[in-house]
Length: 384
Image 1 (cartoon, one colour):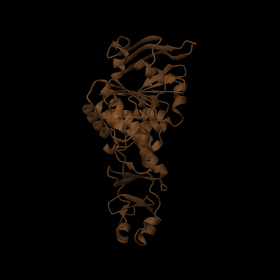
Image 2: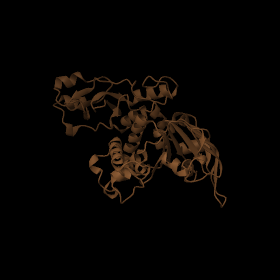
Image 3: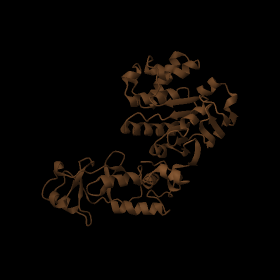
Image 4: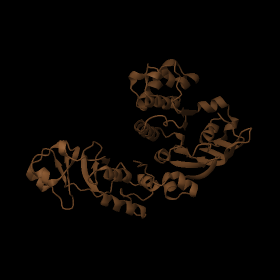
């Protein structure tokens, strides 16, 4: 555990970057520091590995004051990932990853073998090993940065806005990869971001800092969204925090309808048998059960479904593993107002209306059982 006791950072000109900050950062978790510019997030992170020395207070790592450790020994016990990866441009990818093991005295072959293992773990193809950073995309470079930070198997991983310089699609992939790696390795991660959505998705605990480096609230994401400590936290979370809160309610208990689903190779009689009262459209799938689009029953029964004439099916959600937020998003994006539920292979398992999703949301917010049959407010990590 990392414990910060009344830690302050005051610069010679009198500027206070961090003001009497006290936190207990639990082991094997992701603790996110979030807040507006100038709130001391990065300064706090850098005080943990003594890149910045505190003016007052103590930081304890597993009960020992970090000031009593040699600074180089301390830093080598912590992985550190920054924005834009910070790779050595003159070294190959495999040698970038092997940097810390080599500094610790590992042989070249052992260090490179470890680097190759980590490339696979973070989703980098082995063919990239002999390339240089400039030959990789931004997302690939960030994966190299994560691999390098993990190379010596440190118990603590410090991450300073590591995904902020990449596009939203790559960023989501990197976030998912971090969660997967964390599930496998169980590091103590301290993660800095200015993005509240990223904080809610990744954090086991979230510390919201005010300008001036004072702690506004420290809580699990679900609690943060449901009970902001004050007006500042509420404003920082934004007007759509209720939608974000839906990320903590799973979709697995939604009542799906399976009858209004037809295959593209269905006959007119088979299509007519699938017409369902109260459902104005039929969902057409390919022969393997993957969604193609929505069609009106009268039009579909007049002949074989023409995929080119179908309405878009919107964004499907993965039933059970994604959240009510994802289900609602799918229904809103669908021109029919119905969301398409799929399994892990992308095959349709049913459809659900906005009305049914709304009932599940009301039930969840009322404190009853969530759509997955789990207690409302659970931190099952269903952020979708």
